[in-house]
Image (cartoon, rainbow, N blue to C red):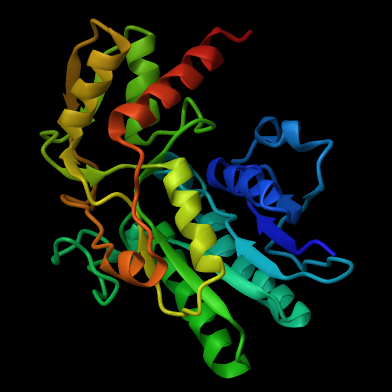
Length: 313
């Protein structure tokens, strides 16, 4: 029998790419999503494969017939625009949704993989960020609903591992980009690309000197799949350690799109991290993983996707 995996948030950006890759590797995939921020267009091409889609809110009890080998919990709003507009659903899916997904994994004796985030480090005082760093998070700031939801999800995941003996994995995802991001996603790469292609001013918050590290989606998914099968329960950073400023990524996108757009500067949002760069020593040594898609290669694929999306009726 094929191994079976349940992916919550399967109609989202990362969840849909995970479904693609696991199907290609011989899995049967059950995708769950309430479509709050996901889109069935991301999984429409899977209709004739070993893929079952269930529209369901994972903050409610999850029932799956038959055996399950892996539960990948990817359900959550993930961009600042989303979790600032949806603060309570973001908190609920991080708490109640994680509890229900862990309950499914426990009932099926399945390996559980949590999509955590570099946001657990907050506006970091350690640079680059190692998994041993506890973070610098404002729990009552506007970003706290996402940061603390993920921190709580990590705590519950580890509790299930220690108390119930469940095999759990935690992947701390750093900035990732690629096809299937939403045009109005609000994060830097899709925003800059859509603005550049539309001839609009590229919106930079603050001075543009704050840094991020951008990982292409295929590299991220490769790291996640390696972690799924690893004898490892501690959190692992998965991201590209190549650090660059927001202004640099904006100018790179202008050059690659051939856009004549200008840069426009706006006030920096509250608690926006000044730096963000993963230390991937643990992933390199324990998973034999590191990113191999260059920024130019990844942006070329992403820009081509956005060009197609913007001309569709």
